[in-house]
Length: 429
Ligand SMILES: [Zn+2]
Image (cartoon, rainbow, N blue to C red; front, side, top):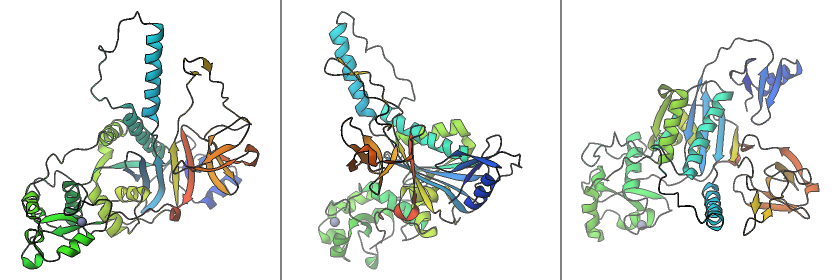
């Protein structure tokens, strides 16, 4: 674990050890600026020599992985859970406004045909996700010296995969090329077994004409198959196995493989605007996977993917000890009236029995956040990661751990609690 350090003027310096931070605080050479992640600011002038690090961003539509490396060490690791309530809330607001306009101002002419969208327009739900991702990178850059930002934009590099069916890219397990071809094949066969169409199981790269019978390692001889199908097929050719049409299908290259999701495009564009395009680099999923498995030997999780994204090819870093869990939340409740005809004023107080929504609490040995409050009765405590209800307890039993700051609810977990399951084995037939 590291303590983040700001200079007297607020410029991020290299992080330090808890021991040194404790001594500085005791000697009144520093003061605390943030509890989570623990950040101190020096009260005396120092040299501002830094060895800037790299941030890796694993963008996603629900979870974002963030990691910062410096001096061959992971100094910051976080998983951020994005908001998923935007679309529903805007739909509700739109319905209220439509109803109110038709109820109260029927005489006004419709005013929806003259609206125009600007060129870089994103739907509000996606815009929120892109902006939250960029905000998180800005936050990391505010507590750590950063000079490089790596963002993963797709699972494989379309530039390098220009017509892979005819170019010499061949499949070898455990090689960087092999990882790229595997991602390409997964996309080409829609992440399901080519024979039985199962998905959600570990999928393998399978040779249509077996290697022992002269089959090549080119993409035109490869499909994706589940383990049972792969075993049943054995050394048979696809034709003998009863799937002659696959042989034809495999020869056709994947069309329009160049699509990068609009969130990722927006994230890269905004980061380039804010940090300068020379500091933002893009990587691909196959490189991430290769680095995470072959070089760093880390289990699959968004935070570990971000570590792999931050690393250079061949660079080995010491893993961190803790992962921050950041949950994005609404900054406030803007609804003033409710009821079928907006006849009730929303009277819910900001504080109830001294508690606000989204405060991080401990109750009966469980840690969660306040997700619901009742005037007479129990408070609902929900899980930080999943948002599911843990317990309902009376507010007297709660113990406050932290308050939400700037639209974020931050908790810290040891790294061992975070690792998820490994998705998809990669063994060729
Ligand atoms: Zn199958």
